Amino acid sequence: MQSVVVHQGGTITVEEKANPVLSAPDDVLVRVAYSGLCGSDIPRIFANSSHYYPITLGHEFSGYVVSTGGEVHDLQEGDAVACVPLLPCFQCEECKKEAYSQCKHYQFIGSRRDGGHAEYVVAPRKNLFRLPENASLLQGAFLEPITVGLHALKLAGGCEGKEVVVIGAGTIGQLIIQAASALGARSVTAIDINPQRLALALETGASHSFNSAMLNADEIRQQSQERRFNQLIIETAGTPQTVALALDIAGPKAQVALVGTLHKDLTLNVTTFSHILRKELTLLGSWMNYSAPWPGSEWQLATQLFAEQKINLTPLIGCLGDPEEFAKEVTALKGKPMAGKILLDLTRS
Image (cartoon, rainbow, N blue to C red; front, top):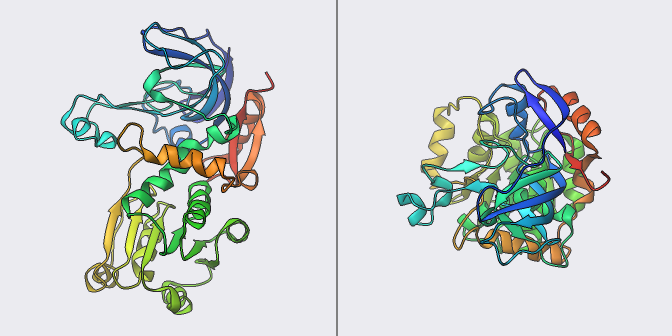
């Protein structure tokens, strides 16, 4: 089979590998259809932050069941599935309390073990989400990223009637914008430094937008006075500047959900820190996308939003290519963020 392989130093090659085989009675062999590049994959490729090399990444993938182990009775050949990449141990204290994302002994498909940037992958049954008949395989490849945002909304007690502000209008941010709009937010505001991303957000669900490269926190706050109460601010960019911005623009008693992963130290000045206290802000850390019963209501809600055609994926896709095209597009990033989602398309091979 063809596999997109990442080597230390950022070299990406397309290689012929042996097809994986079932090794446990709950294993499932999947023929991959689509597999997306995640923003978290970029430092694994270009900053030598992967757990090992060479590695085949890919934790956002969908495909068809090819065969199953002897203990798998609820999936059949040809069933459409999407990857649920976290492999909790289900035995530690955290797992017993259904805090799967805090598992002390977890593995992860496409990070701590090879993933879906290949024609075939073997995964345990519990790490595959059966797609409903009305969901497409392309939607299946977006199931994991949209549940990241839905998990933050779940932790915040939902978004109905709230003034939702999304800082960072990349793929995760755009999906949150669309989901919040569909789930009854009173308004949805997008904040980013990229005019194209802001324009897209306004087209797909945002009611307001601000360019934080042109407006500082005071100016954004002044221009959004009517939306200062019952706020839910969701930070997805994962930079010290955007975390500080989230705290600076927050209105009284706002919820601030931190979704983006920081790769640099965060230092808050006295004024920004005082906003947490004086405004009585609620800070929510949101990690991954799982709840009970496994893998969580976020995954069911995502398929419901797709079934109701509330999520428009087409404008989010930057490239849909075969292994060679995919490797070329990823290499061209040179460590920079994606302008649009880069997806491996294996339906043509």
